[in-house]
Length: 224
Picture 1 (cartoon, helix red, strand yellow):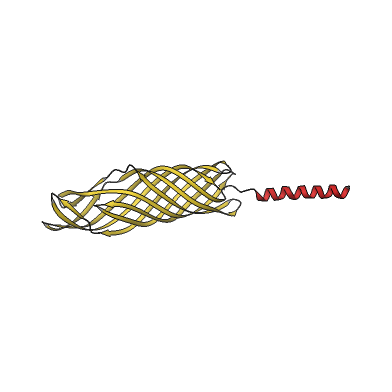
Picture 2: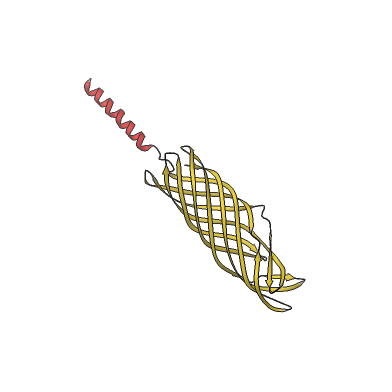
């Protein structure tokens, strides 16, 4: 009888240990999230325009583009130790109801509207090291590669660069959380040669573009 009782106690202890070990740690494993936010893009361009009055050089002034956007992200959080996580993931951001910004060529004392600029979308591949705050919060930073697509003077421009950010996730339960984050993206130079019309005359442009953007997001996510 004593042996049976001892075996029963050992089996119970082993079962409890297995269950504890099998419990998922906070912010561990595969995650998906959706957010909504505000994006501010600051593009600029320099170059030349060739038309019926010859070639002129100047600055192409583009108004800052402020847009609402939706964001979808997928990733995986690796457990480095009980307090430290390393996330890796992909985020896709779609601009909503995007207004067109005028592009104005300024040369000397002369200015002319030569076309428009519209930001379409952007996506990022990122690393997100994080630190667990108590048992229900995760403060994290983001570093990664970014790409943004815009239409500028009728040409589609694919900007490529880097993104940096920081955020905080708060667990509502073991599988669902809310989050807020901010991101800053810097894009390198891109070139194109669009054709537009100025006062009814054809103008051929040779341009170098650059851009940066700031984004703030809030949303919710799920751990799987």
